[in-house]
Amino acid sequence: FFFFFKQKTAYEIMPSLVGSEMCIRDRVVDVVGHEKMAAAITSSGELFTWGESSTHALGLCKKDGTPLSAANAPTKVPIPDSLKVINASVGENHMLVLAAVSYTHLTLPTTPYV
View 1: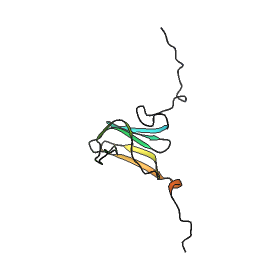
View 2: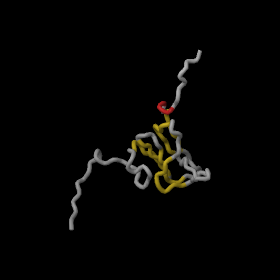
View 3: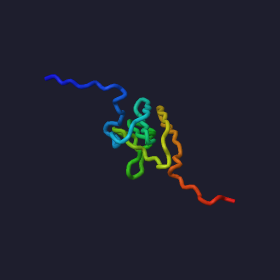
View 4: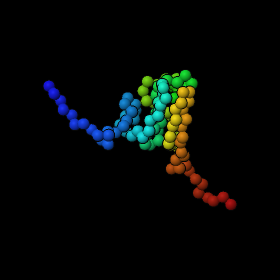
Protein backbone atom coordinates (compact mmCIF):
# COMPACT_ATOMS: atom_id res chain seq x y z
CA PHE A 1 0.00 0.00 0.00
CA PHE A 2 1.09 3.52 -0.71
CA PHE A 3 -0.11 6.51 1.24
CA PHE A 4 0.17 9.99 -0.15
CA PHE A 5 0.03 12.97 2.16
CA LYS A 6 -0.17 16.57 1.16
CA GLN A 7 3.11 18.18 2.15
CA LYS A 8 2.58 21.23 4.34
CA THR A 9 4.48 24.45 3.91
CA ALA A 10 6.12 26.24 6.83
CA TYR A 11 3.18 28.68 6.90
CA GLU A 12 0.66 25.86 7.42
CA ILE A 13 2.48 24.21 10.33
CA MET A 14 1.62 25.63 13.74
CA PRO A 15 4.61 25.28 16.08
CA SER A 16 3.60 23.70 19.38
CA LEU A 17 5.30 21.89 22.19
CA VAL A 18 4.58 18.19 21.73
CA GLY A 19 3.95 16.39 24.98
CA SER A 20 3.22 19.53 26.97
CA GLU A 21 0.06 20.98 28.48
CA MET A 22 -0.09 23.70 25.83
CA CYS A 23 0.21 21.46 22.77
CA ILE A 24 -2.87 22.88 21.06
CA ARG A 25 -4.00 26.02 22.88
CA ASP A 26 -1.05 28.36 22.26
CA ARG A 27 1.49 29.20 19.58
CA VAL A 28 5.26 29.06 20.13
CA VAL A 29 6.90 32.33 19.04
CA ASP A 30 10.51 31.73 20.14
CA VAL A 31 12.74 28.85 21.18
CA VAL A 32 16.20 29.20 22.75
CA GLY A 33 18.61 26.60 24.04
CA HIS A 34 22.13 25.67 25.04
CA GLU A 35 23.60 22.17 25.26
CA LYS A 36 21.27 20.35 27.71
CA MET A 37 18.42 22.81 28.32
CA ALA A 38 15.95 24.79 26.26
CA ALA A 39 13.06 27.23 26.63
CA ALA A 40 10.06 28.19 24.53
CA ILE A 41 7.99 31.36 24.71
CA THR A 42 4.34 31.32 23.69
CA SER A 43 2.29 34.06 22.06
CA SER A 44 0.53 34.65 25.38
CA GLY A 45 3.86 35.27 27.13
CA GLU A 46 4.20 31.95 28.95
CA LEU A 47 7.58 30.24 29.39
CA PHE A 48 8.14 26.49 29.04
CA THR A 49 11.50 24.87 29.85
CA TRP A 50 12.96 21.37 29.55
CA GLY A 51 16.28 19.57 29.71
CA GLU A 52 18.91 19.30 32.46
CA SER A 53 20.61 21.91 34.61
CA SER A 54 22.85 21.18 37.59
CA THR A 55 22.34 24.81 38.69
CA HIS A 56 18.50 24.53 38.63
CA ALA A 57 18.29 27.14 35.86
CA LEU A 58 15.06 25.65 34.47
CA GLY A 59 12.97 27.70 36.90
CA LEU A 60 10.95 24.63 37.92
CA CYS A 61 10.17 23.27 41.39
CA LYS A 62 8.62 20.15 42.86
CA LYS A 63 5.35 20.47 44.78
CA ASP A 64 7.30 20.78 48.04
CA GLY A 65 9.27 23.77 46.67
CA THR A 66 12.61 22.07 46.04
CA PRO A 67 14.13 22.99 42.66
CA LEU A 68 14.11 20.54 39.75
CA SER A 69 17.34 19.89 37.91
CA ALA A 70 15.70 18.07 34.98
CA ALA A 71 12.47 18.01 32.95
CA ASN A 72 11.90 15.47 30.17
CA ALA A 73 9.09 17.43 28.48
CA PRO A 74 8.31 21.14 28.09
CA THR A 75 6.99 22.28 31.46
CA LYS A 76 5.34 25.62 32.22
CA VAL A 77 7.41 27.87 34.49
CA PRO A 78 5.22 29.48 37.15
CA ILE A 79 5.31 33.22 36.45
CA PRO A 80 2.92 35.79 37.98
CA ASP A 81 -0.11 36.55 35.78
CA SER A 82 0.89 40.23 35.69
CA LEU A 83 4.06 39.39 33.73
CA LYS A 84 4.40 38.43 30.05
CA VAL A 85 7.66 36.84 28.91
CA ILE A 86 9.11 38.67 25.92
CA ASN A 87 12.54 37.10 25.47
CA ALA A 88 14.85 34.52 27.01
CA SER A 89 18.51 33.59 26.82
CA VAL A 90 20.04 30.26 27.84
CA GLY A 91 23.69 29.77 28.77
CA GLU A 92 25.75 26.96 30.22
CA ASN A 93 24.68 27.61 33.83
CA HIS A 94 21.87 30.15 33.59
CA MET A 95 18.64 31.21 31.97
CA LEU A 96 17.81 34.90 31.68
CA VAL A 97 14.20 35.94 31.05
CA LEU A 98 12.91 39.36 30.01
CA ALA A 99 9.30 40.01 30.98
CA ALA A 100 6.97 42.98 30.74
CA VAL A 101 4.25 44.01 33.16
CA SER A 102 0.78 43.44 31.78
CA TYR A 103 -1.15 46.55 32.80
CA THR A 104 -4.48 44.85 32.22
CA HIS A 105 -3.97 43.03 35.53
CA LEU A 106 -3.05 46.06 37.63
CA THR A 107 -5.55 48.10 39.59
CA LEU A 108 -4.84 51.82 39.59
CA PRO A 109 -6.20 54.20 42.23
CA THR A 110 -9.42 55.97 41.21
CA THR A 111 -8.84 59.09 43.30
CA PRO A 112 -6.03 61.49 42.42
CA TYR A 113 -3.34 62.16 45.00
CA VAL A 114 -3.12 65.80 46.07
